[in-house]
Image (cartoon, rainbow, N blue to C red):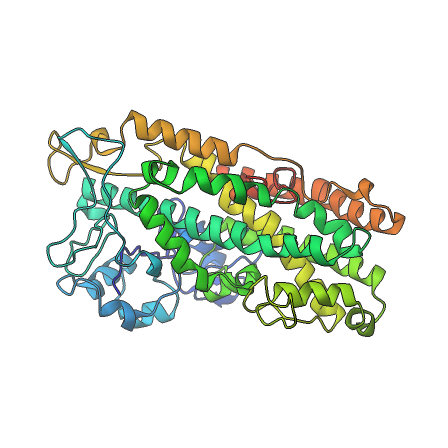
Length: 496
Ligand SMILES: [Fe+2]
C-alpha cells in the first residue's frame, strides 16, 4: 500500500481571503464555525462580534480537487507518507493554529485523496510521443519496479506545498492526470456502465412490456448495451484510446477495471450514503460541494416520483411480495439469487427478493438515479475539462528544454495526444439523447402519465431555475459553476 497524493483542505477563511474569526457572535449567539443562518451559503464574521462590527464573508473551503476528496485515516496514511516531511507543522501552518494533526483530522479540517486501486500502477511505453527529449512522467523508482511516479507522494518522495512555486502547479496537474484515468475507468465505466447493464438486461428478460417497472425503466435503460458493446473495443486494446491517451495505458486501465470489480456493488448506487462514507456530507465543513448539493435536489424528485409510482400499482407490501415477475427480476440480478437463472446478474448487495413497497421505492429510485444523475456527473464534465489539454492533461512530461522544478507548456502532451483527448471527450460527453422524465406522454396508463409529467414539470420549472440561480451566485462569488445537474441536461439513461 502506498499513498499517491494528498491535498489539504481547510475552512477558516472567506472567499475574499479574509480570516473568519472563531468564535464569533451573531444575534447574541456564539458560533464556532461557519453557519448558513440567515444566508444562502455558509458564512462567518471576520471580527469577534458581528452584531457590533458587521464584518463578514462567505466561507471558502476549496482545494484544486475539491469534488474528489475522501475520508482520512491518519494512522494508515502515516505509515506510508514521507517521514522526512513535517506534516504536523505543515497542517498547523495552514490552519494557523497549534491544533494537533490528529485533532484537525477528527474535526474534519483535513482531507486526503487516496486512490488505492492505483497502488503499484503499471508502467507503460508512451505511444504518442517519441521525441527523445521528452520522457513521460512515469519514472519507476529504483526500488519499486512496477511503480509509476505519475502518482505523487510515494514513500520518501518529495512533498510539495503552495510555497513551492512551479512544482506545486506540476504536482496539481499530476493529480489531475491520475484522477482522470481513475475516475473514467472506475467511477464512470465500472460503477455506472458495467454495474447497471445487468439490471437493464434482466428487465427485458423477466418483466413483460406492460409491467409497471418495465413501462418506465425501459426509458432509463434505453441503449445501455450500445456503449458497452461498441465503446470498449475502441477504448481497450493495443493502440486504442486508453493506450494512447492515459499515462497508465491500456494495460493499467484493464487492471483498474479488474480491481474495481469487487467494489462495484449495489452499495455504490446509494449516492447519499457514498457521500457520507467519504466524510463529505457536512455542509458546514465542506460548504462548496455542488455535486452533493445539486444531485440531492434531483434525487429527491426521483424518490418522490418513485414513491407515487409504486403507490399507484402496489397497495400493500403483500402486492410486492406476490408480484412473481418482480421477484424473478430481483432473483436474477442479485448475486444471491437461486434457481436456474438466479444470480446471473451477479450484483453483490442487491436483494434476491423484494419484500415491501418501501424497498421497491428505494430500488427504483436508485436504479434511475445511477443511470441519470450519477452518469451525468461522471460523463458530461469530460467535455469541459479534457477538451482543453492545459486544463486537464492526460499525460505529463519531463523535457530536456525545461529545468527541473519549472513549469512550461513543454510539460504538456503534444498535439497528437491532445487531439486524441479532444476527440475522446467530445465523443463521450457532447451527446444527450433526452431529458430526465420527459417520457410521461409515452405511457399507457393516464395516472402514470400524470405522475411522471408532474415530476418532469417540477424538474423543469422549479428545480431548473433554482439551480440556474445557484450557479449564477456561484459565479458571482468566484466559485466554479456546476451545470451537470441542470435537469434538461440530464438524460434518462446512458447512451455514451
Ligand atoms: Fe458514459
